Image (cartoon, rainbow, N blue to C red; front, side, top):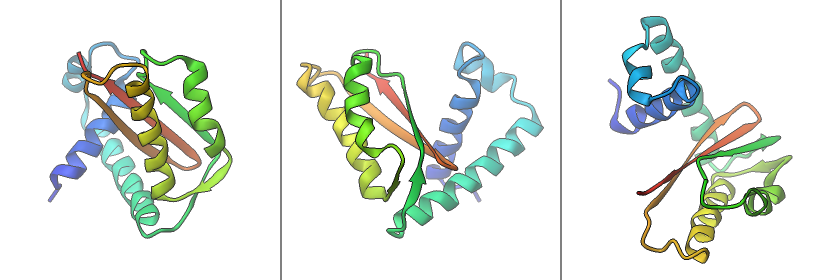
Length: 134
C-alpha cells in the first residue's frame, strides 16, 4: 500500500519527468502504465536513498540543481549550494540547504509569500524544486 508521503514523492518525481511537457495536468493525463511503473521504480530508489540519508549515513552529491526559484538571483542560489557540491551529505546537510533557500526568500522581503522547497536525490544528483506561492 502506498502511503501519503510516497504519493507526494511520486508526484514530485512525475513533476520532474513532466516538467518539459507543458501543463502538469496534461502530463498526468498522458501518463502511461509503463511511465507509472518507471515512476514507482524511481520512487523506490528515492525511498532507499532517503532511508540511507535518514539513518545518518552520507550520500555523495556531485551536482545540485535548483528549479523554480524565480524570485532569487542565480548568483544567490549558487552562493547557497556551492559549499555542498562534491561533498558527502547527510539529511541535516540537505535540510540546511533547503532552510538557506527559504531564508534567502525572507531576506529578500518575501515574508508573506509561502515558499515550499522539495528535494529529490538521484545517484549523485540533488534536485531541489522551489514552489513559490502566489
